[in-house]
Image 1 (spheres, rainbow, N blue to C red):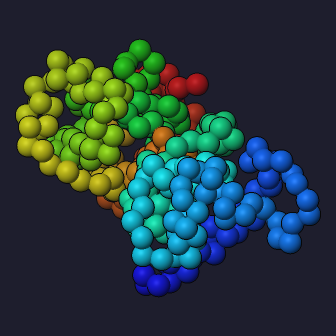
Image 2: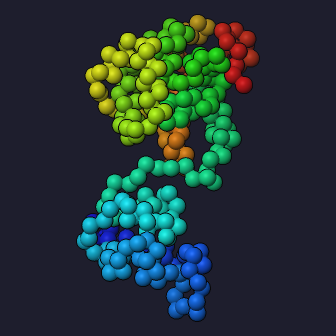
Image 3: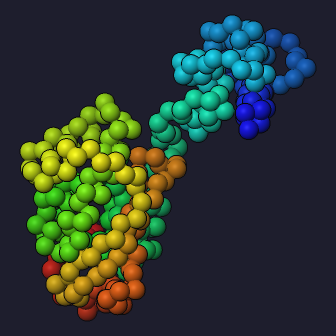
Length: 285
């Protein structure tokens, strides 16, 4: 496996070097070249590393590398964020936190279509800090998502009286929700966005503080939710959190009806014109 990774590192660097012209790297074009792209020595000079060291890196030799040097090489080779992370993995380092590339920032229309297609089942989209970015009509009807509340899913979980009155599984799920948020915070320990959410919850929810002090950690996954809707009665759904590779700052949360309590049929009725007329809150959007 290690030999295979070194071979892949060599081929990857050669291919990325071949696609960068001297002009793109800020060098004079010079005469005709036998092979396209930059020479090894040029990459080394532009990255501020020794020519021999870069040659060893490209040959896949067992040498020590640092994130700073890999970032310099990635800059010279004009690597995308995904390619930069791939370089880290091939070099045997933990990859940096994914970033949103400028050409992927405008994806909200497509994500809106995705969660609307999930109707009549609830779906919403959160950012890194659990702020609600988008939600479909079913999330408004079933989960009580609506204008006028904080729109942070973690804060609302602990402080929104409407959601708490509907959640039969609140106490069981609270520990999981906090443990998952701690895992997200741990990946960005100095991020002020997480600290702002923690500060607000610390001031507003003693229950959150008690669970936070237990220091449990869980990855995002599936959570069983039992809800009591005033019109439809018991609803049993399974929420699944999905990452969006092109938008690492967002997470899609889809709620799938389980077979219990005839949940699917009830959700379909709640999304129907008859069900909407009886809903306690107007449909979002």
